[in-house]
Amino acid sequence: MMPSMRFQPAWWVASRKRRRLLSSFDWEPWTGRDGSSGNHRRREGKAPSAACSRRLRGELREQPIFTTRAHVFQIDPNTKKNWMPASKQAVTVSYFYDVTRNSYRIISVDGAKVIINSTITPNMTFTKTSQKFGQWADSRANTVFGLGFSSEQQLTKFAEKFQEVKEAAKIAKDKTQEKIETSSDHSQESGRETPSSTQASSVNGTDDEKASHTGPANTHLKSENDKLKIALTQSAANVKKWEIELQTLRESNARLTTALQESAASVEQWKRQFSICRDENDRLRNKIDELEEQCSEINREKEKNTQLKRRIEELEAELREKETELKDLRKQSEIIPQLMSECEYVSEKLEAAERDNQNLEDKVRSLKTDIEESKYRQRHLKVELKSFLEVLDGKIDDLHDFRRGLSKLGTDN
Image (cartoon, rainbow, N blue to C red; front, top):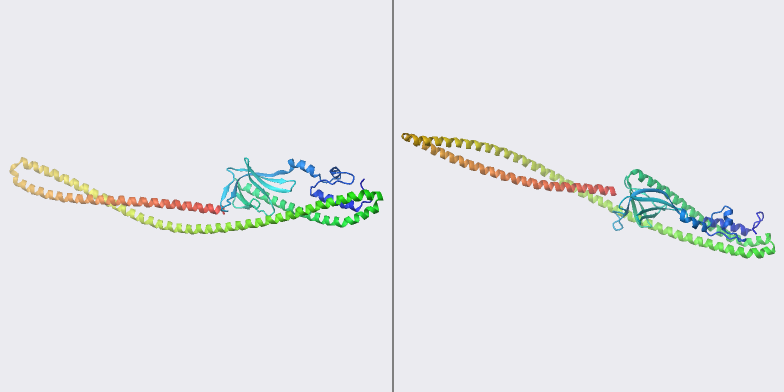
């Protein structure tokens, strides 16, 4: 039989306090003196029993609260600099809320493979590294996750949800700490109230009630105290676990700081190399100007060659005229034998013409030789110009690759 509402023994008041505390930790239902169990607690408006919670856990344990799609990356565990794709295409990334544990997780599955299973803690930070890319470090998984979104709006929504979930996790952690402290205080109060409970029961009850109440009450109080001790032990273990997580986060931050310093040194090296390439580019530009001047000289040589060809054609035409005139004179010498004297004169003139012709032929040969030499020099200059242009194109391509590498490195940082 339950005590009356007017006269309540101290042991009954203490047991109600413990039951109220145990209900917040979702432990097994309390069994009273009259054999009542969890049904009695639910009739009073208390929390459901652990058995009922376990039955509902399969359906209500984790619920998705936010879902999006993104490309998933993980930091290279060897270099701690480069990103490795964890999915071949955009996959679903969701926030899940665990009702029983009061915790939040980020989960992503690619087919049958779990690529993200990160529990959010108040110490985590989501960082936007570009307009469509963000990252966060998970000390438990000892890695850094990166997400590439298709738009800046999706990244902003994901970051806002991360901050909201982080604040919720912090509030849940504070509440858990308060419950642990409250349970510790109640255990101390119950220890102080236990000696007076026997005295109160002897005052408010008869001798028969003493015999029936004292034994079960002490047994119940001992079991309640044992449960509270277990809760305190678990809270101490959780404190140690949180300290280990804090140390792991500090080590991860140190590694990230080292990686950032190395990337800064790499950027300085790229800058020096870019300066060297720029100087080489200026030198090549000067060389191009010199080659253009040589090309202009080649053009002038071409004009001279054209004039020489025109002069050679004129001389050849004059030579043909002289040959025609010589033939006519020979015919006249054959037809008119009496004009021998004139023929001698003509022969002398012919000899003179032949000498002139020989001289002209020598000139023509020398001019052809000059033309061939000029052509050879022109071909040689063309070959040199072509090889230089090929080298210049290769250097320009290297410079473009170097600029793309610089832009990519700036994007990663």
